[in-house]
Length: 95
Image (cartoon, rainbow, N blue to C red; front, side, top):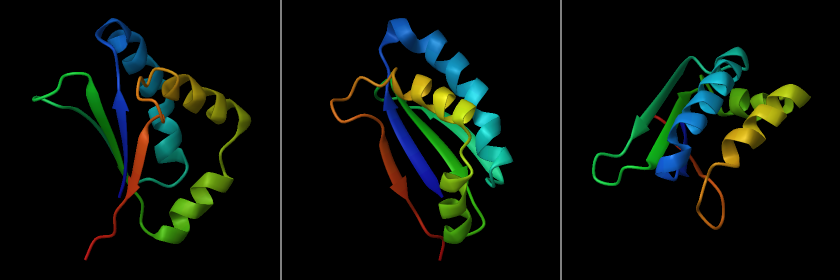
C-alpha cells in the first residue's frame, strides 16, 4: 500500500479534488488495484490518498510507466500541497 498525505488550504479544496480525481485513473491504469481518498476528521485539510499494488516490483514499474501527461497531472496535484517539503509518501507491506 502506498499513502500520499497532502495538506490543502480550504480555498483550494475544490480544485485539489478535481485535480486528484483526474489523476486517480492513472494510478489504476498503471497497476494499482484499489484507490481511495480520505480527509482527516480531526484536522480538515489533511487528505490521504491510498492505493494498493500487488507487489513492490509492480510499484517500481509504476514509476517507470508514468507518461508525460500523467506526470503533468501529478505535478498539478502536488502543487496544491502546503507543507514545506511537499506531500508525504509512505510505503507499507501487508503481512
